[in-house]
Length: 224
Image 1 (cartoon, one colour):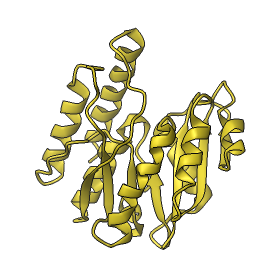
Image 2 (cartoon, rainbow, N blue to C red):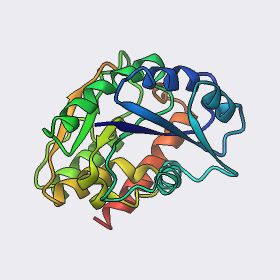
Image 3 (cartoon, rainbow, N blue to C red):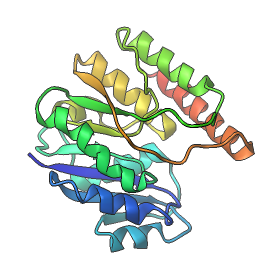
């Protein structure tokens, strides 16, 4: 069984090569597709140089839109035979730990795996977005106790794809993925992974980012 990695990226020129190279070390991964979501830097060029296929979008449309562009390009559907890895662009060399996400799906022990990253060494946020996501998944997902409700590191099989496409807009992607899979009676398994990516800080930029996350998650909850 093989897998395809789908990576949305926005202004990640400094690390995307590392991420792509790490994913391509996994023997199960046959393709890496990076969707450059309107970056103003060399993200697309760097990704291509590392061995990824790249889709360039003219303007930034958000994570959900980027994933849907990638899904359309790949022709994802319930009949799709490969497993799909969804990974963030800023994982760098730790992206190789996606092997942990692949194994349960390839062995038919899960329909979707969710990467549970190590706790950050310092407080990056205030927790209100994570609490909202956790509550929404529990209430709409049959009481599922999501420890990593916002994790973008996932592996999906065809059954999960059939119930989760199209991807939700903006930063509501992860919550919608989990809830839709649980509502369909699919097996969602959180897996500890040794992945790391840049966390938003306790500054104006970080606070605005979390407000956008909160807005998008609130919006998607109404549709679930």
